[in-house]
Image (cartoon, rainbow, N blue to C red; front, side, top):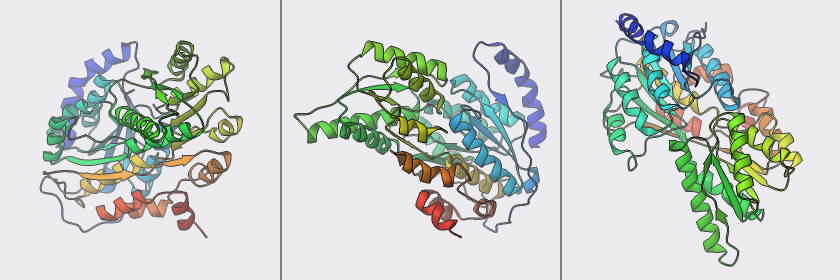
Length: 404
């Protein structure tokens, strides 16, 4: 039935996909599904009421709707998701949507047209999830968010829809407010008092939470140091490419020549690459303290040169757990609640020196933090065990698990 639905929907999408390809902004594109060979362990938990008969692992296709599967953070996410798909013996399909609202919502339709049994998605604005969840409900496609969560107070309608949906499994996300507080505190402790801010897309759900954290961090510092206050400038937005990130950083610095720090809020890594290039071209490397979220591959060099002061990251395994939640829902191992949803709070790793990054790189860059056997075992974990596994991930955790 799902294959027949996908054929019908695919015909309806052909014209819109061709139109998107002709646009000046790149349209969402789907990669060929990556296949895997090892069968996953069978779990005996009861199936959900909404579930169809559990699919064989080699018939399962899970879509990944992501801003980019090729930039710094996106490629790291793809690497661990490919490893998980191989360990479980399922297929995965990537749909790059650039955090452009029309492409975010269309990505769910693209996944349904391809016959996906499940979808994990890094949306931009929470309002997009109304369309995404409705599509998933219509085509019985399980869905989970990664790097994102729907806030009940800010988006009550979307939250209610997600809570009642039999196919919206849940969310894996970071504590972005704490992340923002921590990064601002690092800058204030380094002596920065005029802090500029570069976001990536106005209204992005994660950016808004980080921004709230930055503002709280400033308020906390100023309350504790009334005679030595810091200021945070309003954000300017640098998109998700290095070129736009560079142009925005140059504009910020030129308009605010007394700025002694720049927060590059995120956006996948390429925005930061552009911002650092702008600072270097202006001869200000080491004179403007830079903090960001999303590790660069050469972060150790950037820290050693003084180009970067600190960074939070190491969270590329976040979508792995959304993937496992959807996989277990497809298999009938997790009952999907219709009065709420499953939620995992994923930890950040903070580095502020080349030594910090060296320890991280050994365990998260040179290798994955989970072995094939560990990834396969996640496919048979209860949700509580999966949640506990995610929330304890750290350099020390990997060292302990891989000690021999």
